[in-house]
Length: 241
Image (tube, rainbow, N blue to C red; front, side, top):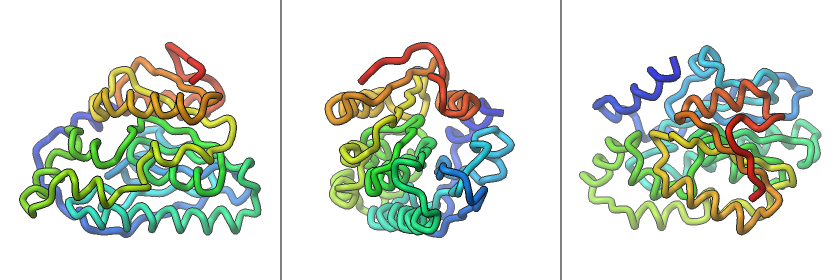
C-alpha cells in the first residue's frame, strides 16, 4: 500500500482544488499528549489504514489542500489556520509545553514545526525539508502545482517572500529538548538538498537533538517511525546533531 501511495503522487493529473484552507481535525483521547499532522492529500481514514496515524493522540489533522497552493498567500493562510486551531486545542488540554509531543508527517511538518516552536514543545519531524518554497519548486509531488503557479505569473521569489518566517529551518530555536528528526535515505519526494539543508540547520541550532536516518522511501520512513511509537530510533543510523 505504501508503494502505491508513493506512485500515486507521480501520476499526471489535475491539481484540483488547491485553494481551500479548510482542514479536518480528528479529536482523540483528551488525556493524550500528542498532536499529529498528516501528509498533504492524505485523508485521515487512508492514513489510519496505512498505519500512519499514531495510536494515542490528542488531535490529528488532515492538511488543507492549500498547504501546497499555486497561490503563495493561500499557503500562508493554510499554515496559520491549522497552527492557530492546534494552539487552541493545546491550551484547552491543560498540558505544559514540555508534556506535549508534536508529530509532523511529510508536509504536516509545515504546521508541526511552527506550532512546536511557538509553544516550546517537543517535535518529532518525519520526512521533512528545510524550506517550503524550494520544496514546492523542486519536489516531483508538487510539479503540477508549480506549473499552475507559473501559468498565473508567479515565480519562486513570490513563494520565498510569502513564506518567510514559516520555513522549517526558521522554527527550530524554541523546540523543547528531546526533539527528533527522522530522515529518509531513499526519499523520492523530498529532494536530497532539502533534506541536507534541514540536517545542517538542526546541527547548528539544536546540537542536542537526535537525527535518525531510515533506509526507506518517503512513506516507508513515516510508517516505520509511527510503528515504533517514537520511542526507539527507526533503523540504520542514529546520530547526535
